Image (cartoon, rainbow, N blue to C red; front, side, top):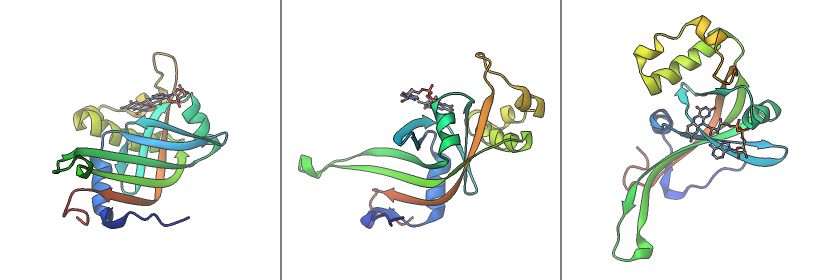
Length: 170
Ligand SMILES: Cc1cc2nc3c(=O)[nH]c(=O)nc-3n(C[C@H](O)[C@H](O)[C@H](O)COP(=O)(O)OP(=O)(O)OC[C@H]3O[C@@H](n4cnc5c(N)ncnc54)[C@H](O)[C@@H]3O)c2cc1C
């Protein structure tokens, strides 16, 4: 695989990239289905080199991930417009991370519990996450009678970019 050239705006500190991954609320999961690119926005949790995602056990995403587990996952934050004296010198302040890895569908209730606790804690808080039970996780069906698939992406490598002057290497 080729090395990405990010120029002077590269984030080299893995801790900074992990901070961006942890604080982002929406990630974009990119994958291949029948040789074609596919992308969807998702909520997720990041912990210790692993991205966790959950959703319905049906649909193109689930089919694609079983067919072709190699994915990339992107998060970004647009921080604002940086004004300049000339319009063509205006800039955008942003930070973003692209992570690469392989998807693994979690099969056991214990594995799903770990992932769902992280996701629920992130979006609904610890109190709500504390009410998750093994039976709830094992037996849950949605209104459309669908089970929940929980997957993890073991991050093999990640790249980061940040356009905030002076903070690129933070
Ligand atoms: C902010 C946000 C957070 C989300 N969080 C989650 C989550 O945590 N878990 C989860 O399962 N889903 C989440 N979704 C919905 C997700 O983006 C998908 O729509 C959903 O997972 C169904 O994907 P699928 O591949 O099964 O689509 P399918 O139902 O199989 O539909 C496939 C078709 O719909 C199109 N499509 C699918 N999703 C989108 C989309 N979001 N926008 C435009 N076109 C679309 C595809 O291009 C394709 O043509 C979230 C969406 C948003 C915007």
